[in-house]
Length: 106
Image (cartoon, rainbow, N blue to C red; front, side, top):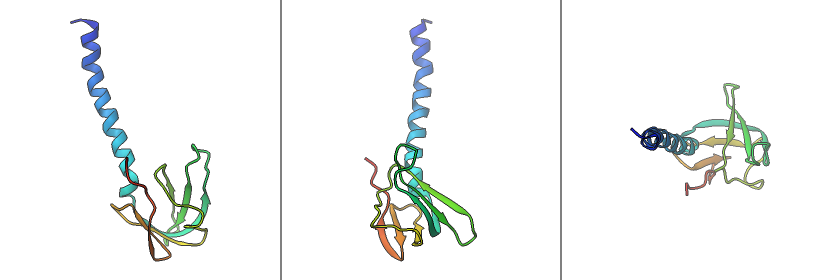
């Protein structure tokens, strides 16, 4: 068996797993669900300038909402606002108003 054929036979499954993993990570933000009060917002975080929103649940646990598909602005969300990310949806409830908080996947 030639070296090229061995390479191709190994590269195809590795490439397929990488594509699948990338797609699942991209969709993970839509499947996320949490509810609480916004305690901190960093609109230009150190991680490639993506927004970082920290929400404290009623149980006291802090959830970090951090993804490149977040499309909220400073006028949409402020510290102290009630925030709920709806499961399997691109929408959030901010002070009981439904707002699109995750952009469509391109």
